[in-house]
Image (cartoon, rainbow, N blue to C red):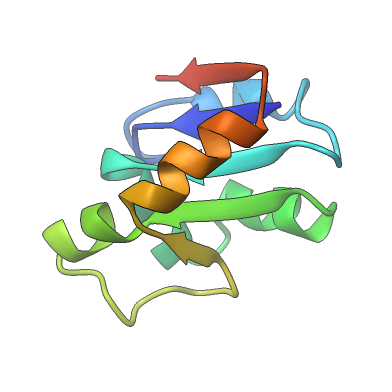
Length: 97
């Protein structure tokens, strides 16, 4: 399953709510303001990563927010083509707001 987050952990409780349903075989995609989560110490995404969940981040949204080079972890940065590839590869998707 692909979990798509659009809001930062400061704007939404979505990361906490998703913790109950995200499993090791799932993937997470951070887009829009959710990319901020990859630049913050103690972000909830790191516990997902440590549990084996694949984390992806949309490069264009990182650049639009001036956050290049500020990632706190080894997160897969992808472009729009990679975004489309993820949606094709993952039959089931959920968008968290």
